[in-house]
Length: 199
Image 1 (cartoon, rainbow, N blue to C red):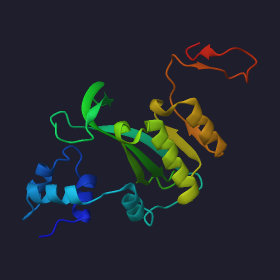
Image 2: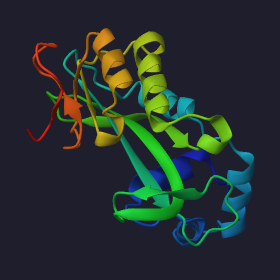
Image 3: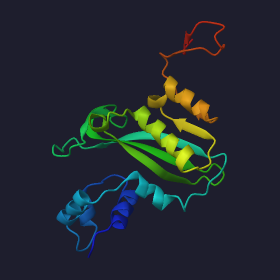
Image 4: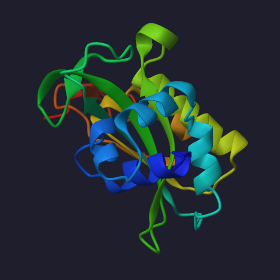
């Protein structure tokens, strides 16, 4: 039996906890861990491939939401994977060794369906990009290359930075993101000094 992109992508979509090659091999007849390992070493699974497979399934809506979120795939027991690095994991509430992934999800608010449409691997040692840079690059792609309709950007505290919020505003999009209580803000249009959010 031949191992294909479809096999691997279906596994990633259906597995909720364990994403290892060993676990996948245990669930496929005639496919060994070594065969999957060989495939992954020689195959490029790019964000473009994700978009090419999702774009015809999306039910677009002018009022759609774009969600940006990140996750860390825990690889604390892996010492050979090049892109494994120490980083903060919200699930662990602390630093773990893992692979950081920034995801872009398209949500149709009328049908309540959603699609993962883009992602980036967080690997600043290799590309010099921050998580905020990745989000901005995905936004640029959505607006200027993919031309997909959406109205609102929802994002985590990580992305609540001035330059990104100003960029989203320049696109005439609405954005929502939680702010840390130690941030200084001004909701008086410069009539008063910045105040701590909790005040």
